[in-house]
View 1: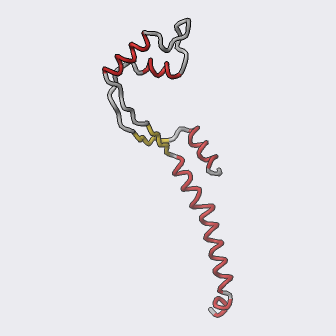
View 2: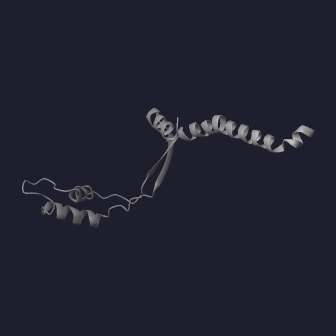
View 3: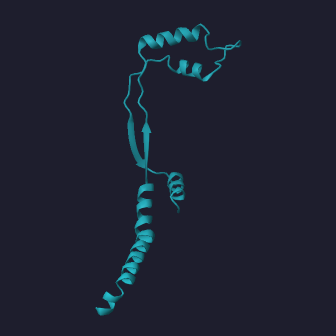
Length: 114
């Protein structure tokens, strides 16, 4: 007991090093593998399209406001206009947690240092 009191600093350093090694090689890998096993997917909220908005978009599309000389859609905004010609109700943001696929799991492990 006397030797331990005399070498208190060394004992504290040894305990800290052993604690760090236990964390680094035992606890950390378990936490990383647990967190990589699940994948959270967030679907953003959608304000929806009313019947009136859909009708206006159909008129704009039929007038050729978004078409080039050959009648093809010419830009991303025109693509979105075409997509918004159907009525759809608003939907809230959705968060869904699923089990990770093999590719997602491997990518997560690689990202976290495995």
